[in-house]
Length: 335
Image (cartoon, rainbow, N blue to C red; front, side, top):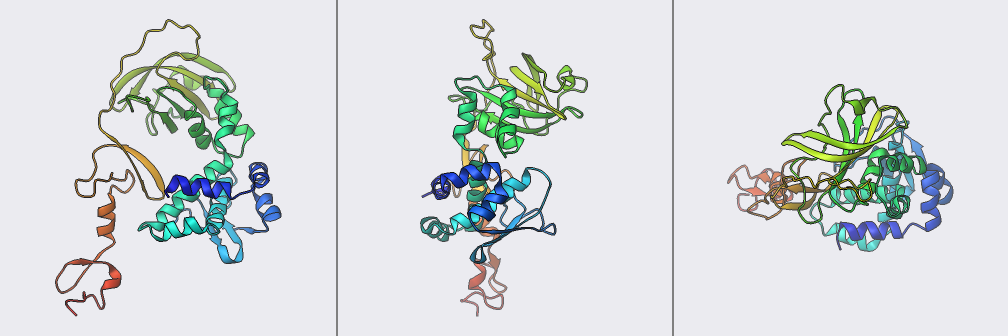
């Protein structure tokens, strides 16, 4: 059992008609079809202690779900996430597996986050939209219009449909900043050293930032990344406040194109996967020499460091112990 298996079990536990109804009207589906009590709670904070990414709270025994109204599609994700808590609580296999997991709170939040993404945007929906391909920038807007998913969730789903190195970026047309990005690494060589990523910027006055809403453009572009400059072929479309841009290593939009292959450098560090801070992650780097696990890109800790951080010092011998093994600040040997 792992996180992937837990997500599959949770999604499979939701009847197909309920999944279809949730995409159209999450709130009505939860109250009308599942009989849950769902209430808006503006006072809820926007963060969970276990690192989840939604603004909600569930009282599972009572079938009550509270959510913080945001007036945008974040609400849909929150409702789907809280429904994940409700569904997981009915699955004995998942509950038992979580009980044996040292980081059960964070892992549960990860499962519910991924359950929410799959519920809002099933994998097959993006695949059917793209068809035989290639992925185009307009697909992001079409997927957004056809589902209850946010732009970033749509981008993740479509990046998974790319067959070679590429990325999908959402660029603020006023500042030129990449506000969201989803990368499709090269199937053999992995991640390139230069790829569009959150926080990077397009130069002020760049012609793509002036792309009119609904207008598309395909061209070769030099991207100025943190570690250098690289050329990409791009397909872009203008939205109201954003530019959606699909980056590809080759000209996938011109059949029979004789465009030359672009030589690029790849990051040769090992790419490691892990789970921490309420999400799954993949990082380029070297593992902790002690536990052989990756360091979380959010908190910077590996599993053994997180475990040590949760320990407490004995006031007498100054050794580390689990908090429940200390009484009055003393370990069993010093009491």
